[in-house]
Image (cartoon, rainbow, N blue to C red; front, side, top):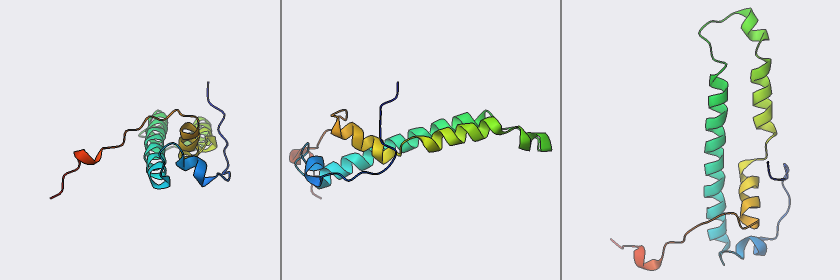
Length: 108
């Protein structure tokens, strides 16, 4: 079951995004990292699906028989963008993140 995530960009209050971390910049970094994870996973899934259609021969029949390949590509294009998924997860409290403490950093 897929979550209901908007496929278009909506305006959000920056203060609301900053609330969980107390800092908008930390929130943006968390969103960036999660969106990147989602994008990499989707890219791998698409590549795996398209690999099923790969063949070593080039024929005219192959050009006309790639309807399934087109359908797979359209499905992945119709999915919500990774940044929208990340924001939705963040707003719903579904993301878990850890902030490194100041004691963990070393100065050279």
